Amino acid sequence: MISFLKFVKLKKIKMFTRKKYSLKSHNTFGLDVIADQFIEINSNEQLNDLNSFKNFNFENLLILGSGSNLLFLEDYKGVVLKLSFKGIVIDEENNDFVIVKAYAGEEWDNLAHFAAKKNYGGIENLSMIPGTVGAAPIQNIGAYGQELKDVFVSCKAIDLKNFSTRIFQKEECQFGYRNSIFKKEFKNRYLITWVKLKLSKNPVPNVRYGSIEEELRLLNKKKYSISDVRDVVCYIRTEKLPDYQLIGNAGSFFKNPEIPESDFEILQSEYKEIPFYKNENNLVKIPAGWLIEKSGWKGRRDGDVGTHSSQALIIVNYGGATGQEIYDFALKIKEDIKTKFNIILEEEVNVISSPN
Ligand code: EPU
Image (cartoon, rainbow, N blue to C red):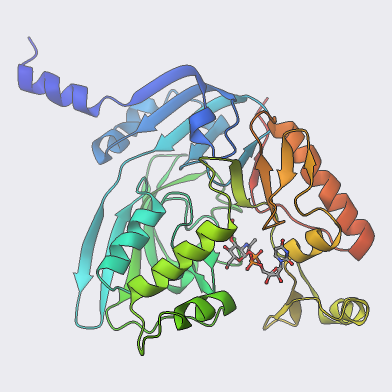
């Protein structure tokens, strides 16, 4: 006979599994797509229990954080695995820095909020980025002159091929602009379970980004705390970016393209006002939002799809659009930018077709 305590324990480690499950509340575009199978892991114990899931066809696996960077084109005929276990702990500390360990299912912004409250510097400019901690290294999240890679130490991940675990040090993650090894050769192979970040206890805020500097100046202070910077970033994002809870979106739809300097000079001779950032590798980054606005797409709406009226790089779902309609709209923008500027925009969101 099974004891009561054992029963409670067994109940506790039971994970949430469903067949034919709607992902509407699990993607920020709000698309009502159906997953063949949905598994939600809520604790570390449940994660260790993954071994007993060897029968699942993980070939057709999609790992989901909070679905803030995904566009589903159709129902997903495979397994969707959502990581929801949370937690933030200080792993190591001295007078200069802390190593913070955060579990994959923690909301990224809870971590940014935690750091700001303690005045730990390094991720304040990344405040209010939607998504989970586990998803952050995958696309090396970045905003207002900060990137995750600047503070990333390591992450732990489970290899879904053989259920072994591996610690990835920063160098092994091959971080680039909105890119990492988890988006390339290890796409959908590793399940990130925690991330460690090194945050400064004597922070010098990075306020070079124009609008942050302007807003901070209004505070009229000699020195800015990490909380001040976070508040300003939250204010700017709230003013400028649509809230996915009110209007479906996945942040920037495209990456900012990087083009050779020689091509840029030709472009600049025609458009004197073109904004740009020079990279070390002789490439010039141009804001895709500018290209899209310049092509007349800002605030444009076609049925239930459109570009946001104050940030053309964000494609929004006014409610009833399908993933395919959103994608078709994005492809029209892409085509137009190619014709007008001879620049090929690359999607920043992950476009998900169903496995067959
Ligand atoms: N711009 C326009 N029209 C627009 C939008 C932008 O002309 O409609 C021009 C302006 O010159 C503006 C410049 O583009 O100064 C840059 O715009 P913004 O500061 O909004 O940043 P972004 O380059 O469009 C990137 C990230 C954002 C991040 C911001 C702030 C990418 C793909 N996007 O956007 O990240 O919040 O910088 O650092 O790199 C995301 O990844 O989902 C995201 C929102």
